Length: 298
Image 1 (cartoon, one colour):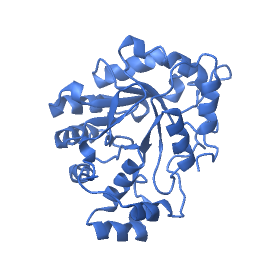
Image 2 (cartoon, rainbow, N blue to C red):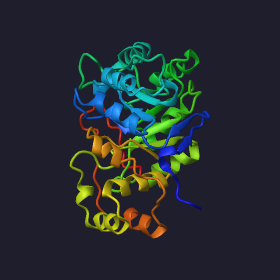
Image 3 (tube, rainbow, N blue to C red):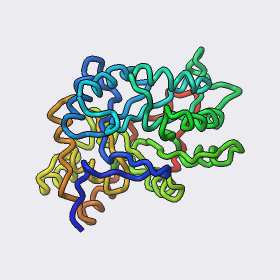
């Protein structure tokens, strides 16, 4: 079987929708940089842009989409409901669409399973949790403003709680989680596969100043293949069946992160990456009023 041309590949979700395998992440992208990054990415061939209300950059993402000249229907746009908005799902999606300047998004995610009190971010609502939020999110696809709904940062334990809720009707199309060789989460990935939920990998390169870039095993492997460590990490993620959304605002890196076609990692190379012993998470849950990671993903 010939290696895949990942830049043209899609993963089919449980709704039948097709999510482009490679997208541009925009978390931690500064104002003034995102608009240009989105434009460059789309003009370079990306067809998947990931943002969130919490990033404070939806307006610029929308401007970058317009600047690119790429037709809206060719672009997959994901945004997310922020934690203090859990009781205001309708307002949340309307706010995002208004900022983006779009009539619909392809995927709307619950950003975290934490229904945070907007009046005190250190507190969780006493009378509301992510199950109530999901009951509200389930109403959106019928409105046409949201094509698919999903979750983010959901551990197995919280997914089980969600499935057990009496109001639960729509299985999330996607769970967007942190995935890289130092947070590989094989148990969670297998669980998602069993349930027909697609995984999108955020911080798929290990985020800003990633220790993965300095890893000798990875550097050696990349050199042998004539690729960058970043390209190797992306293909590793893609070959595991997850879509990847590397973040960059540099035109050069945005384009380099797309040079993924026509080559692959052998089983042995994948094994080398799979067996890297170090563990770290870019995104913990200590800043949230509730615990959302339970060590049940390995």
